Amino acid sequence: MSSTSSGPPFLSRGSWQESRRVAEILRKETVGGVLLLIGALAALIWANTAWADSYLALRDTTVGPAALHLDLSLGTWAADGLLAVFFFVVGVELKREFVEGSLRDLRRAAMPITAALGGMVVPALIFVAINLRGGAEALNGWAIPTATDIAFAVAILAVIGSRLPSALRTFLLTLAVVDDLLAVTVIAVFYTDEVNLLYLGAALLPLVAFGVALRRGAGARWWLLLPVLLPAAALTWWLVHESGVHATIAGVLLGFMVPVSQMVGGKEIAVAEQIEHLIRPISAGVAVPVFAFFAAGVTVGGLTGLTDALTDPISAGVIAGLVLGKVAGIFGVSYLMARFTRAHLDDELSWLDVLGVSLLGGIGFTVSLLIGDLAFGAGTVAADHVKVAVLCGSLLSALLASVVLTVRNRAYRTIAALEQIDADGDGIPDVYQKR
Image (cartoon, rainbow, N blue to C red; front, top):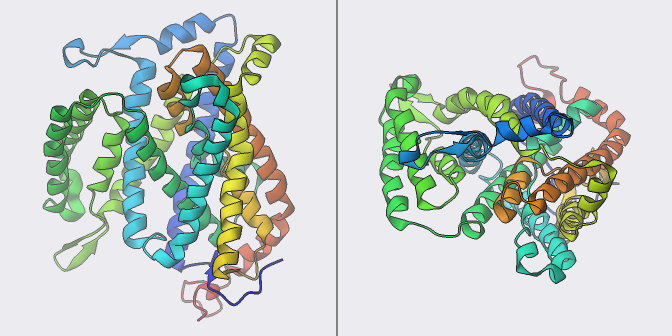
């Protein structure tokens, strides 16, 4: 049942423009999520056949100029290079959310921000509690269960045919965006061993040049600047890589430099939206699936190997953090915040809907796998156990979310029909025009 308290609304529908933008983003992420699942499944199958050695040989094949310290394995290129494209889109989306999206209004953004924080802190605490006896090495993986994979989550929604109402879609996307920001911060602060300040400072030059070129460039025809933008972005990435900070951070910084909009000839040009439309398909359709292919391939070793992996306290911490910690953090903080602020749910929604979205938050794939390799070293036994745990925890969260959200599908279909009624024929559904 919805709350009837008289405080501010929680999970309000928002504007028609915002609802369309969120729906468009999630549609693209759905395709990316399906490709991600295909890439991960292909790697898992290949790594557990008689040809497993050929998969490992492919993943460990080294390419790149040694003179630039870029003689990296294909698996490392996927994690450091391709994921930088993913994090570039994250940076652009973060900036759009803060400038014109749901994070612009601090009062409205307080709930998803605190929920995302809860969804990070509680899984980390659960992991630490389970691995206290494992020493500092085991505890290094505390951040693995804190991430949410939005592409995987919306792919699950597509599979079960659940059409979330616009308010829940916005809440889920905002959670994921804040989650990504927290994950980037964690990677930069806790998984950087040594920092070369000279290289890091030098990275500011091409980074600023990238931003200036976009701001003073061709406006609606910004793509004419690609001969300048691409080298500046590549140089920023290389300098960050050389500094010791994980190279994906360069992607976020470059994304932050993209102007949300520009005035050109008296006309406002949505530069960030144009760039996002160009890069997001590359990120969702190529970068993330290829990373998943190289990151998810773990040789389980039959039932014995699976038992060994799942009985490892590190694995138990990851699974419990994803399945239990995310729900306790997101749902628990949301409920407490609503009670504390006397916020009320929209009459069309219930706390069961918040529970379903919280369970989706337990799907931590892409960034969780990345942090696992950073914490324990790619190819180590602990890192392989993390991969098994992330896969199991994410799938269990997905199954539980599917059960909860499927129960509400009839209500979602009713809300979806209501959100399409346009009695006055002005192109904007009537529910978005109610005062």
